[in-house]
Length: 88
Image (cartoon, rainbow, N blue to C red; front, side):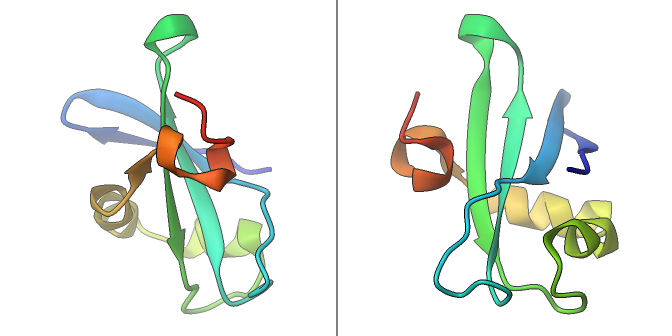
């Protein structure tokens, strides 16, 4: 599974596909944004529709840092997301 890194507001976030498959199999993917470790760990999730490749890994590779920053702006906390198991 590919992992990208992105710095947003001074925090380093790791970005990776969630691995969760929805009924929209190749038309909608989810990403996890993870920063910190232990009790300081924060997870955010977002779903998006790929514009190019219909493979999770390839689609993530095609996204620019600006695309990822835009997706991050629309992401939600892990407690509200099935991709992150509704965990805080």
